[in-house]
Image (cartoon, helix red, strand yellow):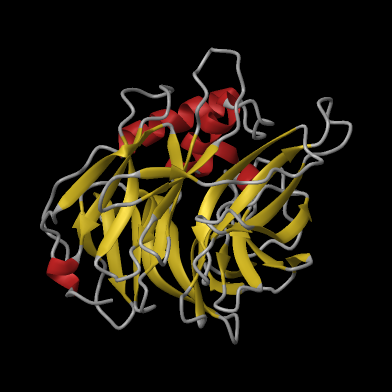
Length: 379
């Protein structure tokens, strides 16, 4: 839920087409995020120790920043909105590359689609070959006579070399997560943030591969073969977000919520469950139940653990679930958005919402949690 509010605010301030959510809805979401984002304290959960682990914040990535990817070369990539609220100016988002050891920041060169009147690159994710995948939101007509077009590009963060991965999308993808071969991806629809669904992508665009969940007295699909057509009320629709392809390519993790007769904002407090989907069979398996307001999901480099941020068993925080057994363990009382696991498996990074009040400008802070004390020194 935090991602919805922050992305909505960033996108509107930069002048890109607004998400189809009424302003009152966005305001209510901001209030809910503020109310559920206060760290809760309570008894330690079973599994990994919930003792506060060493954390550090990087001032170089703070303020109107969103999106996060941890690349194989050890650098962190995020997006910054340079626009000042109320200034009336509109500048493109900046894609930045940060060295977590030195705190040094460099700009990543991107090449906007020449067809666009204006475009913004956002939601970075790490590609298996070490590059960044970026979603480009493209305005093709000031009057909307031509619908906006979107694409995903792969960018070398050092050389700036850019390659189109998927073009001519009718919806704006969230961060994309790619299989080891780099030829297929999973994502979700940015503009349907109240009722997102898993979307399959290939080189030619959206693909249709049904993922059928069974339970709650009905069968339902976690994926959406026609993104951009759902509308905003969500009534009767299943929801799925943060789909993540495992590094070994064998499974896809996703948080999902079954269909509900509730409409629109009434679904905000509905629980989500964490699933893994076997790539060979597309059969989902429910792993963790009862997540409230999840805002991040990430695989460990060895594909054995999943980190997520949510309220679980009455506690807000960031958790790790070991697929080899046990219960989720709380590793931080902080809610970390846009989770990214370091390539060596020793650290977990995310953005902490430092906003002073609901509706205030984005004020995120990049924070890294040292996991080596509980997970060992290797991946």
